[in-house]
Every structure is written in structure tokens, then in C-alpha cells.
Length: 463
Ligand SMILES: Cc1cc2nc3c(=O)[nH]c(=O)nc-3n(C[C@H](O)[C@H](O)[C@H](O)COP(=O)(O)OP(=O)(O)OC[C@H]3O[C@@H](n4cnc5c(N)ncnc54)[C@H](O)[C@@H]3O)c2cc1C
Image 1 (tube, protein in one colour):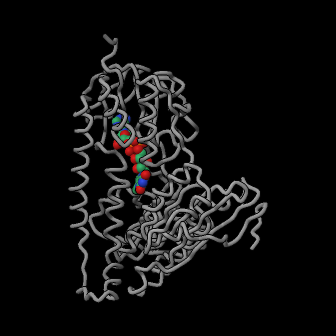
Image 2 (tube, rainbow, N blue to C red):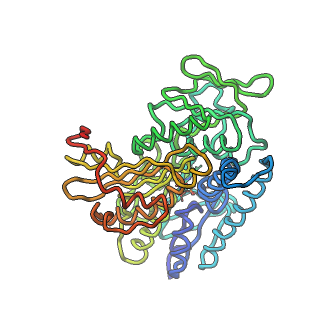
Image 3 (tube, helix red, strand yellow):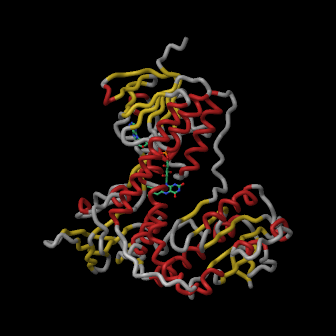
């Protein structure tokens, strides 16, 4: 009989926490999980899922336009923001229920409350005004949009959290940030007919992605009508008498918009969690510091997901949770593998990418072969859409290993998932070459680029 109320108590009912709770409960452990807001966490409630639903919604105007080339006459379309929000909310509520039920069905207990640590084995459940004890504790409290207190008028700004619940669709929006959330929302709002400006302090959007993708996406977004201001920051946001906002940016220009969205990064949720009293070490930005097995410096307290500020993606949080369960409860220590993670940006066009960018590969390998194809996807031909698709393979010339694959165009995210397997497996360009193409597809280009477009030797491009 355990000396504690629970074998495992999880704080945070998001992607990582729910997975760890459900799988541990299914092993027969006595498990509790506390969620202060809504089960499902960021991904389900105000991240990946509602975002992707918005992406779908925002793509219809182009589909309607493209239909004409295929012989369709589409009557004048109209859009109702409230319908989208209501339908999205219904779907999110359904998923939320499934997440909580998943834990309960496996024998775990769910608590709708904020939870904080009192000491290394004791947790306070605030809404229930009581404490419980647990042998093992998992911190899976995720993160939240970074605030920007230094910006005068920041209180008038929204973040991605509010963007999912706006009472009205703005006529004009400014979005500050150059990461994937800022870029995705710029495309969403533009697609829904909102006059959109992206403000980014860096030289090019989407740092850390392959430069080819970054530049090509930037160009395409501008061609569609999204205004992108790089090397620019907002300096002041003022509410006008008519309720709109004046956003003054670098150089003194003023943008008048209905909403100003900040997407300048995310911050780990560790404040007032009691981590200090339990003796858990935090990084300077407040992330929980863990070892390779997701264990903190206090040996019964673990942390997974965004709160550890390793790689902030849902599948990563889930993978870390699975490794935690193996390590803590199955006597099978496994450390999460953060190398070569396939990922997508649901911009329009979409990005799918896995492995090293050309620039990163050039720093690590003496000689690269770069295979690059730019073409108009078949679906755009009859539609008359002048939008190109980009595919690129970065190959180590010596070992022939494919180091990175980068795609911009329709369904790039789906392709990246599949490319993640051969690239993770370390397959070579020769393996790609002897793979039969699937015809007619856009993806066939990935196995039919036989000659390098150029080489990179000691960091220099040679044609
Ligand atoms: C707009 C947006 C779009 C995104 N799109 C993608 C995408 O397309 N693909 C992708 O892979 N990732 C995406 N992400 C990232 C993804 O959502 C996160 O990486 C993922 O949700 C992290 O899971 P987690 O379990 O670490 O934390 P979360 O899912 O954030 O869950 C943490 C939970 O803990 C709760 N909590 C916090 N403190 C307490 C407390 N003291 N007591 C009780 N409960 C507490 C929170 O309410 C929250 O529900 C997106 C994120 C955002 C914001």
C-alpha cells in the first residue's frame, strides 16, 4: 500500500499531461490530473486544432476562384464569422470531452482546478480547497503567449488566445511576429478578407527554416496582398475615438487597424506553481530544467512539453510523455529523441520541412548537393493560378545522405510527415532515386530530381 494518495499526479491537462495520465492509469497506477482551464490544453482548445479549422475556412475564397477554370460557376460567396466560431467551438467542446473521458476511461481521476505544489510530494487543489499527496509528480503546464509590457498601449492588443474568440471579424489587422503562429494567422485573416499587415523585427520571416522557403513564402504572401514589414517593430498602440487602433511602427508610419495581434513568442507557465518551494530548478526564462529523461533536479518531479521549452510542438509533448511513462513506471528508461523533427507551417502556400536547412547543413558538411525544383502544380494550371511550388533536397555529397527536405506548396505538411521517415532513417539520395514515382502527383518531384541543381563547397555555392 502506497504512502501517498496517488502514484502519479499530473498538473496540466494538455497534450503531454493527458497522454501521461491516460497511459499511466492504463498500467494500473493510481493517477490524478488537474486542469485549470479546459482539458485538451493549448493544442485542442486554442492552438493547432482551431487554427487548422480557421486555415480551412480561409482557403475557400481561392478554391471558389480556382473552380472557374474547371468549368464551375460559383455564385457570389459570403462569409459568416459567427458561424465559423460557433462550429469551431462545438468541435473543440467535443474533443475536450474526449480528452477528459480518455483519462477517466483508463481509470484516472480528472480535477477541474488549478493545482500548485506545497512540497515535493504535496499538491494543493485550489478549487477544492484541499491537498493531496503523490509519489511521482509530472509538471505539464505548457506555455502562454508572451506579453509585451514594454509596448505603450499593449493592453489594446490581442494574442492568439483571443483571436479564436473575436466577436467580429476585423476589417484590418496588424500582427507582430515572424514565427509560424504570426505567419499562419496573417494568412488566415487575409484569406477571410481582412486587410492584413505582418510586422517583424528580423530580416526575413520564419527564422530557422530554409531560406528558400522563407523568401518564396514571403513573396507569395505579398503577391496575394499581405503587407509584410521586416526590420520593423511596433512602437505604440493608441485607441482612437472611433474605437479603431493606431499602430505606430519603426520610422513613424501609422497603421490604422481594428485589431493588433502580438505573436512574439511563448512563455512557460511556471509562475506561482510552487516549484521554488519544492526545490525545482528553473531556467532564466522560467522553463523547468529537466535531464534527458524529463526528470527535474528533484527526483520524483518530472516535466514534459512546452513548460520545458525544448521543442514546442504537440507531437513532441506527447512523445516526451510516452518516454516519461516508460522511464518512471516501466523500468525502461527512454529519453525523447528531438533530432530531425518533421514539421509544417500552415501558411498559404503551406510549408513542410524536415532535417537541416541548406545554411545549417553547409556549416556542418564540407560539400553539399542541392536538388531544387520550382514548378506550377497541376491543380493550378486550369485554375490559372500563378503560384509556384518549391521542392528542395539537401544532400551530403560524401555519404549521399539526405540531410533535409523542404517543400512549399499544396499539401506540403502531409508530404513532410512521410519524408520524416526516410530522413530520420538516414536514407541516401540513391534510395530516393530508385524509388518509383507516383504519377501524376506533385510529390513525384521528390524522387525524380536526378541532377543536383547546384553544389555548396565549404559554405560557398558553386554551380
Ligand atoms: C496558436 C497556436 C498554434 C499551434 N499550432 C501547432 C501546430 O500546428 N502543430 C503543433 O505541433 N503544435 C502547435 N502548437 C503548439 C502546441 O499547442 C503545444 O506545443 C502543445 O499544446 C504543448 O502541450 P503541453 O502539454 O506541453 O501544454 P499545453 O497543451 O499548453 O497544456 C498545458 C495545460 O496546463 C494547464 N495548466 C497550466 N497551469 C496549471 C495549473 N497550475 N494547474 C492546472 N492546470 C494548469 C493549462 O490550462 C493547459 O491546459 C500551437 C500553439 C499555438 C498557441
